[in-house]
Length: 172
Image (cartoon, rainbow, N blue to C red; front, side, top):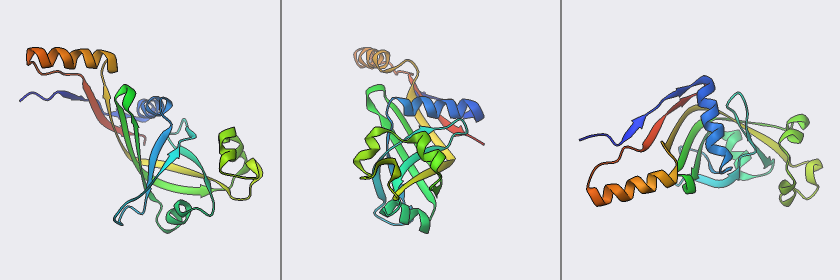
């Protein structure tokens, strides 16, 4: 049986660029903490940035359950999906929390005011950095429109399609 998905593992800069590309279309993810407990502790979070080192950055309240969970166990998993373009990403890594003012200013957006009553000066504002240890992605070779045409043609003809791409993303 033919594999209908090709593997394209990416390393270093190519991996970082792929993560940045996948996140730019949809900056929301499920941020999961306490990975050894069931049910998993997941919540939607907005990814503020994927920097040039491949780290994921988030704004968070210092008194949140998420921050408390990270203090107890820094291992986290991020799940991102962009259904409109059939792009998917999962990232496992270690999270650290900081109150570094320069980083807060760098990733602050006006929408964050909805969560912090005193805005950027709210004493609850923290920044979470997730340093990826393992990442995996699923994508299409030609974008969603071409993929849909190929799927329809395959359904009519019975031929297998080869339009998926997946792979490991290694930052280090």
